[in-house]
Length: 204
Image (tube, rainbow, N blue to C red; front, side, top):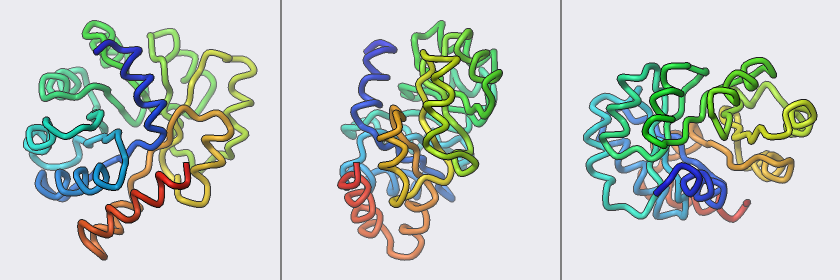
């Protein structure tokens, strides 16, 4: 599977579940529940203890599995070897971009400014994570695409059921959701995450 086919799959998935677990087992359960609810793209964050065990448990699931909260090229390589098909970080890291280009893996760095986005674009990043998206309006995508028409944006941070469709309608390639799923899991367990995931998929 090449870089562009993975990006196409993320675009078709529309929703990326950003999974942060208290441990690997919780992360795996959250991921499986999101997948059962129809979410096809899962981003396992490296803030989860022993996250590699969650990668291993999810290898046979029919999902696009990526890694988030990647802070250096060593972690990116670890994630790729564990099965990650895309890499996400909170900010642009040049070494991570270089490594992902080497392996043909999409790298989605967090950016807020035009300058950061331009740097990421020049480093070969095809999709930019707008983070935190809660600080922006969906119309920001059109504003960015004026000077940078080739930038494709995935808003993350502050995305919810009320605004996800507005972001997608404004041109977002996909949207990352996370805290809602964690809250659902803490309050209602596995089945609450399945139901909430279904609601998100219905929205898009």
